Length: 351
Image 1 (cartoon, rainbow, N blue to C red):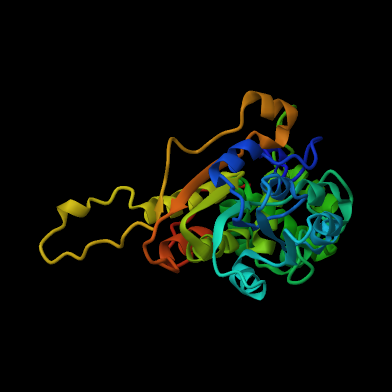
Image 2: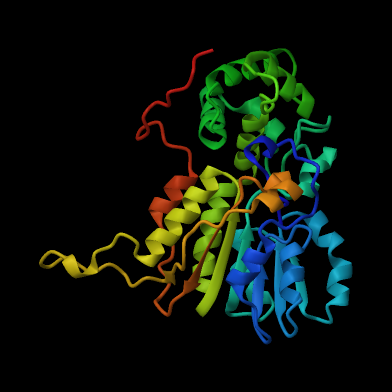
């Protein structure tokens, strides 16, 4: 569960904590019934899980890659009388985790993509430039940290990460400043990096902090968030029953583009099945149906209660009986940095 982030809250965080964004809309999309089993693939503080368990007779398998989130939820699991199962893991592990709990299919799955409020507000995690802390940004406890990336990547690769994952116009200027700074002293803390970025990126009063998009980009790269999202969506396609419901809440354009394309491709949107050329193979049967006008956006009242909700989008669909399609190279390409061979040079501002 993520408490939501507007574009101006991507790394800094806000005042609201532990508020599940679009909770009622997510619950409506999942439509839980007694006897059904659900997957909360991003447990966080458990807002969606508690809403599902509010329907008597439901069960939830909840996973989170953050061990602190799982540890904090043990009391809730103890109170659930066996209806809540908790496991640490990433989206790409969800089928293995489900198998370990003897679950072959789910009636509904919910994803809430990105970093949680608790992670943003805990200085030691290194997600936020609001606090002095180690430059970490790992949602789990292993792999490269943000400090590893900024201290070792070549200037071009670092600029690509900032530009494509953070949509940062001044990516080249920032990367150049980072490389120059680390030649004198390695980056170790969040404020050290934020201060370097602030020195080279123009800013105006009452606008987002100059480091916001760079911190977002590094966080995405450190945790392979977009790659895990693609793997999670294709795993959900395999794990949902006929009639199962999939709900996905995103918070910025990179995530939403992947989810939008996934549902469009899997629902046959834009395919003219009756207008095939002679000997042209018919496209695969749709694996999802998409209902109503989407995406669903938070209300003005919700955004007033929780500023982090302002950029949230909910997309949802229902699984058909068609066989799962599996991996999709076009979706995977949306999650990856463009290769130097095939991508055009990004039009970034020169510093």
